[in-house]
Image (cartoon, rainbow, N blue to C red; front, side, top):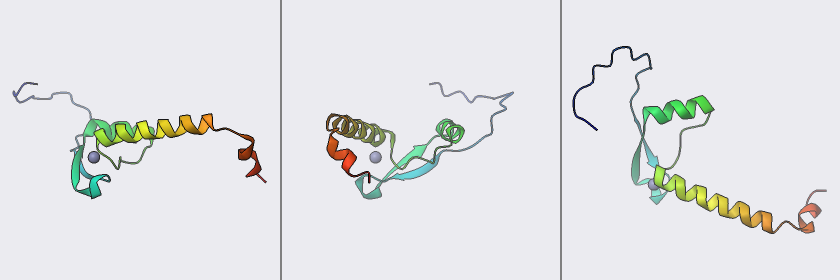
Length: 84
Ligand SMILES: [Zn+2]
């Protein structure tokens, strides 16, 4: 990081600003910055803006991964009975 103002010549990127979003964890009392770089990444993937800050997103991803693993382990004939 340096504090020198950068004269961005040839910056053909669309200029945008961080969006401040309230993290849905912690009763939405926590705000986080959705950075322009991330905005572009999400937009390019067609994702909606995140509902959680980066830290909570990682926690959520871990929770989901664990749940998926458990679901895989519990794969049983019982599953197929719900199909009808
Ligand atoms: Zn959070």
